[in-house]
Image (spheres, each protein chain N blue to C red):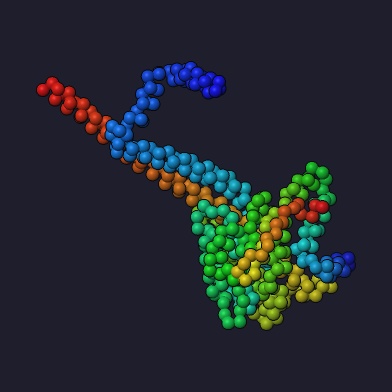
Length: 324
Length: 71
């Protein structure tokens, strides 16, 4: 009771302190209570527009902040992705890249982001994965998905959940590193049977262009078969193998290491593309919010001016009616 | 000679080449001197969650979160 009285007292004292012009406070507190009664529709519409303007302005602030965050993350991850390209290039020189190879057990590794608001890169990689699935399907063939990232999971669950074999998420809690990706690659190798792994990801080209890419990693048996039959990997037999290990052992080690390197590069490229796509998406959305704000301000000012003009006309005509 | 003999051993212990090379890399990291050692070890954090799917249903998810082979 005493507290309430004190608070009331405090407020009475505070009011003149806060506003230098008490009359102003009086007016502003009085008008909203009276306005709806006086002229309902007109004032409510400006109120709505004002609220809308405020929310658009807030959204613009958020998208601008997200753009800044994406830009700073992009710079850090872009150099790592570009450096990691040196990892797969020797493998492609040695084993070649054979996306058109025809094998029984296909495993499609779809790489996507965990978060949205980054344009179409997640749906692009899902689309390409579905196309790979269709391309490689046949009567005695098997197609399985290994899904990295929350977004591709959500899209693939809808129509091909029977084919999903493994789902991995929360990749980017710590900054991406080779150890993490190689442990994941290890998990994939242990849990999935495959003749060919097809890694689908978005290769980073520039901030506005991402190439959907498929990297193929063959199992050691398929590599050996192809090399012996002199097919696409016929040149592999020209290499000499040092040491006492057999060719099969060397090939198995090689394909395992190749897969982890390819995965590392693919995950990094996709993360770079994600940040780039998010940056450009947020850029365009803050521009759109700015345009919207301009339009709303124009409408708001026009309505306000119209109401002022009407009021003036009313006053003048009233005065002239009294005079005349 | 040692490497020739070692190759089948880690393979028969159920390791893949990736695990083996990671173990080796971690050994090298542990050989660094102190300010660099902690930095190199903290750089290689592993965290992700994995769930196996069977018949269109996710099985129990498991989380991997540790400093790799730090223990």
